[in-house]
Length: 137
Image 1 (cartoon, rainbow, N blue to C red):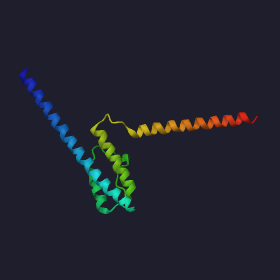
Image 2: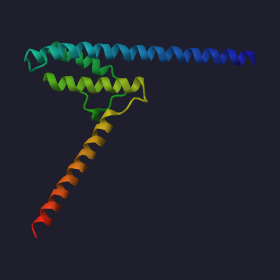
Image 3: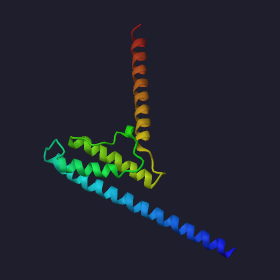
């Protein structure tokens, strides 16, 4: 019984160490993205439209470090500053979800809000059309 408890403690300790190492890896990638975003924002404020080759290379190394990348996720090197920033923000959001799977899926929430707004607009248009039809016999 004591041996079983010791084995469980050792197993749980190894799992905790693996989780901590994984968290640290994700944190390093997030910090690297933050640094790159800061530099890209600086370029954007200066009116620079194209991402310099050195920053594209850094972005490539960072994006290659992302776990579980899917080719359809749109996370790839861009040559223009603002689209590259968008890619890095998506990559960061993916890392935040990996760090905390309970994190809200903001894209899904945004789509739901947009659908509700479109439905509300359609309802207003239909109401106005009904009012116009009723006032013009």
